[in-house]
Amino acid sequence: MNEMGDFAGRARVLVEEGRRRGRGARSNASGRFEAQQREDTDDGWGIGEDLPAFKTTVRTDAASTVITRNDSPDISFDRSINPYRGCEHGCTYCYARPTHCYLGHSAGLDFETQLYAKPNAAELLVAELAKPGYRPATIALGSNTDPYQPIERQLGITRQILEVLAEARHPVGIVTKSASIVRDIDILSGMAKDGLVKVALSVTTLDRRLARSMEPRAATPAKRLDALRQLHEAGIPTAVMVAPVIPALNDHEIEAILEAASGAGVSEAGYVMLRLPLEIKDLFREWLATDYPDRAKRVIGLIQSMHGGRDYTSEFGLRQRGRGPYADQVARRFQLALKRFSLNVRRRELRIDLFRAPTPAGGQFALF
Image (cartoon, rainbow, N blue to C red; front, side, top):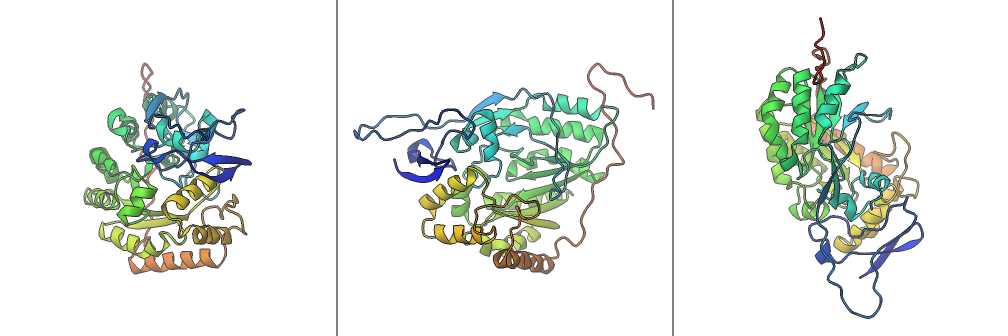
């Protein structure tokens, strides 16, 4: 094993490639809230152990509510639903990784393999939407982890949520990296006719090799663009997210991604700069060192140039954009590309006036 990086003053050890094949993170250090820190290490005897490969495990998340609220001033929604915790896509840069530490897991390989599902999400949603004081506003589906990650194919929790929202005529915005969303075109197209849905796909790169390395179990760039095309042809409003923009790695693709998305019928676009809070800063460095060592110093240097010499600034408004010459250059390029490809000409607002509260199982219908 190789030692590299550091978090909370302790050495980190990379997991052998054979055990993490097809995964994004290179290590699996204990979460920051754990009383004891455990990791594999080489005892120096040269006697190898046949440790098992990391496999995906799905547990039930005993949730009592399903709508999460936020008051962040730099986020366009105040409520969201995440059908799953953890994400098998394995994106090395995922800002949700540190949340897995609250569950007693690592932000590394555990985040990709120790997953939690909310099988009662649709039932909980009905109850919350039916509350007398509920007022509708767009719900973001997949704000933390991907609602269409691979386990959705078997569990179908996201589809159940969409069925509830469609029946209640409640607006929803979806963000995903998965082409599997086309499975639900039958529901989404009906909602789109009433102005109740918008779908954004994140296209980080058009380079298959980079995508495979950085987002190992997400759909290929070509499949994401094809999904956008199918959604558009079905009359569903679409957007593309160039997220994250990573200095010296995919930043040169901004214009190409927006051009390709525009060709697929996308009408809106946005971007987010790479964020490296908490454990992510070490996980991302490990990935750079193994897959792009020749660019590592340049990438980190540009990131720090946007955050006053640090890896990350948590301040609202700056955490997703950064500041300084490089950040300004990216922002200007993006704005010019939007104009060039006629994107964001008109922002589509979803309707809230059609909402009708659902009736919980065993409940009474409203008189009026």
